[in-house]
Length: 629
Image (tube, rainbow, N blue to C red; front, side, top):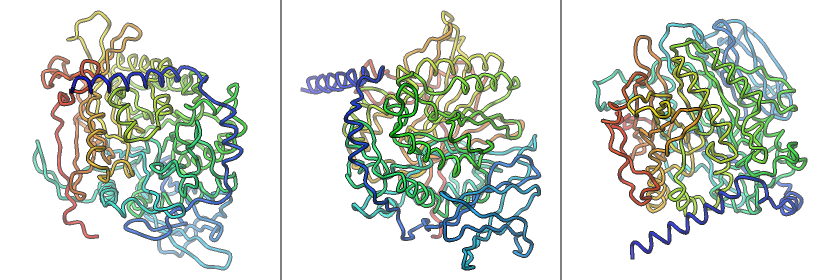
């Protein structure tokens, strides 16, 4: 009987995915008439409803301040946001007496970036209405010595921040109200980012001083820091109180007219930045962000209706450009790129380059020019800029490459298919089309991997940081020339996924069956079949992966190995588990394999879940038992 059940499941999943995968290679599956009908008939004119009541660390706050990446160590840049009631902003020294700068914020999002050519430890920002009423915000920028070399420092990473859920057709709440895991996890993010001393239970090493990451200098968002379709566990609702997009047609369609969509983006970004645990980090440390699909709509560029003859679909173009403008003004503006109107209207690539101390960073933009009908994820301009950047990097240096979609993390089709069918309720086509492993995307993906090989042959050490997958993961990528013995393998790169700081799917509120099924679908992603390109074989090996709340950090210390940490929520809501790896670029492949148990490939037996333990990744417990609320 067990064999019969297994056989039925394998056939069911395999046939389903063969049908699905056959649709990823062209755009013939798009029912254009049905999509047009959805666009014309489904739009409603009322608005969305973000939570208004304060709870836990959520304090709805229309007047906001964030630190930006400075242009030099002697400069301070910061971003402000308000609304129509208090559009006048004045900047004072912290004593509140000496006016330094002022500005009047403009529609539609009331944002502005101030640049001060002098360093300040603290500033007072006053938001004033026409009637004279004032709200004050204080900031404490930590951007001095941002570029100073020969200094130990750390960078913190997060993504997939979706803290809201649906209560009723016109009511929304924090999912923290039902489950405290997200709340305490955000508290941990704040304390670690602000170098607070924490209770620390060591494993595999001696007691440390309680500082988890030393001298944080930068926050990097790996994608989906904002959801235009928040609360998508209830995506089938006709009048969704949180989402701007409906999901009852072939592809997501607008639920709001343009005026309401503009209001949705303004109020949505205000709500997403209204968490005190978040605010206490962003008003101290600068942030650099990439966008992904949810900043626009789920699966943007991978449905096939976004472009007609490689030009933006007239029906979707105004929505896309508004979402793009909102991302540029709220997230991209805090990074190193100079913001201009042309950046929005001409749909230029939003990839970024930054050098902090001795570490160079390249951040891909995987959404602006993505068009599955043209087999394109990034523009030729962006690809050429990446290659020029890689060739400019000095030998014997570690570099960071940010890709919102994982480069080497591949789903297991059978296990993933069953999990998606029973857990995710139909987000299949765009999920598979989005992946770098989707057939239309493989050519550009291989160009990037080939460039990584060229970099590694120059003794450049790529550290890839990814998002999207709603997991925390640590991977080691190996390569060798085709035909060489496996002992000649060298480490090509590391890839780390930090994706799920707050999320309605990653809390502990799933039933036991769903949680176990998703866990198993993640654990079976052990090792891809060998990939061969340009006479090289590439072997991704998984060190550790968990579908839990997570964020990450990298510690760069002079004279020591770089240490990468993955923070995931523990079984107790007041505990965080830190998994960490000291990066080893000279390790012998056979020595590395001797630490592992031989992984099972999914195609050998997709129901053998337990043989996944490539390496004993050290860990520590960070306790919030004494945390005072």
